[in-house]
Amino acid sequence: MKTLNNFKKGIIKENPVLVLVLGTCPTLATSTSIINALGMGVAVTFVLTFSNILISALRKIIPDKVRIPCYIVLIAGLVTAVQMLVKAYLPALDKSLGIYLPLIVVNCIILGRAEMYASKNKVFDSAVDGLGMGIGFTLALFLMASIREVFGNGTFFDMPLPVLTDNKISILTMAPGGFFVFGLLIAAVNKFGKHPAAKKNFGCTGCPHAAACGKDGCEVKKEAEVND
Image 1 (cartoon, rainbow, N blue to C red):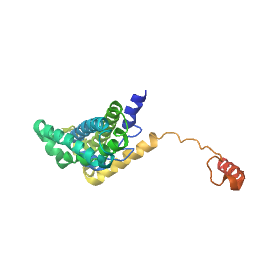
Image 2: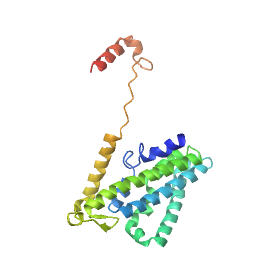
Image 3: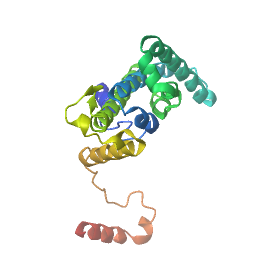
Image 4: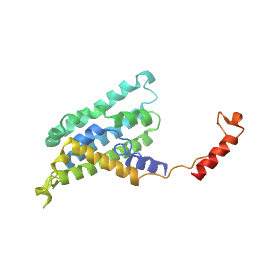
């Protein structure tokens, strides 16, 4: 159950794009095409998962004072390997992604998970965390790219769609359209994915003014908030 929750949190509860709002630059830049979005998502998922594994495995060896440079070196090595593979076997995708493929090195999602999770947890848990976050990133890009490509280009996976091909909303393929769709998706997640708010726990424990007010002030405040 813990492993499943750890995996699911990156997809829904802590989606890196739509909830944590990380990796905005590649999200906006590569989501004009579904193929580009999936290519970027798979590349980031690969780097994120294996960087988490390596950093978790080496967390007791890497000196704390130089941990960030060490993380970047490991991530850069993985990104270089991915870039070489894409360039060799998928040259069209490599050309489409351009500079955004090598810029995965500085993607804040990857470095953030390395610092916040992989450096503090075991290898298996870190791998699951990286895979969940990567899939969440990929799904967010796919959803955003689907909207922008279908309504902006009138195509789906570069295949022309009847009616929509002749009635394109071209601004959706531009930067303003990207921000518009991005904002709509974040608003939708906040509206429908919000968890119930925790109930307030009234009491004097830990209150620095409890001794001075004799608890009367807390009771008045509690009654006023309940009435509201």
